[in-house]
Image 1 (cartoon, one colour):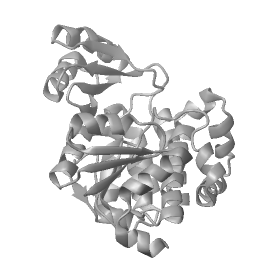
Image 2 (cartoon, rainbow, N blue to C red; image 1 turned 90 degrees about the vertical axis):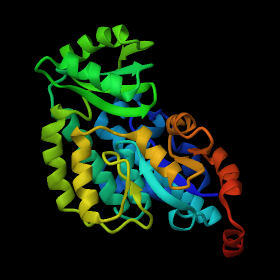
Image 3 (cartoon, rainbow, N blue to C red; image 1 turned 90 degrees about the horizontal axis):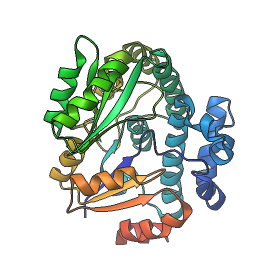
Image 4 (cartoon, rainbow, N blue to C red; image 1 turned 135 degrees about the vertical axis):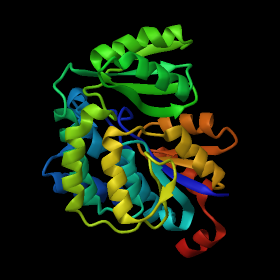
Length: 323
């Protein structure tokens, strides 16, 4: 069994996420307390009580999703002796989830990851005025066809592939008018559906250039250690472990395509046959089934998930160590 730990991105948030972990496990409670302290904000109260509109704000959703992922991981470590270093061959995260993956692998301190994601969320929201940009999901087109549609729709504006999630699920991003043009073009090119997404900014496209500059400055000031296992970078779809390269790729990621389909394929080609999604929701588990149909998937986002995941992941040596 070869395992990868994956970490979800924006869109997986919901009010109440992480509450059962905090209630059941001291190690998880400590994560939420540390994130609250790092941000000077009762983010945990917002996560558990809402309102949903405030949790969905990019500057809140990003550190909140990371906190749930890290709470799940720390509970696995404390309760069952399962760590990134002794269990995973790779880590990877979808967009903001790449920061969660790097915190899990020891590249970032937890407090630094929370502050970076707060900064990232604010910068991405501020990069374009509300209403200027949009994102849309093109369902039923492969990446090459979706990229061609985006290029044709641009007509001098920005329109590019933002997320290559799976074969037949590509998200495009850019100027609203260009993205709206792409909807009809996609249907003419054979897309089953082409739908605008309810997002607050056009992520992962050239309109995010100001946010990339903010993140370059923020990342330059944070200590980064080599991850204990390689991280499969969104923009490369290949594993890296040098902190300087990780820093550069995180900056590129703000305006670049999240190559998730290829990331999963790269991990599967590296021998991974179990994908463990740590955090809120089960979006990445669904994508793993599409992108690596022979692999097993596990989602660990609540106290109820913990025992089954531990039983599936533990080696005899870990059992012995933790007795």
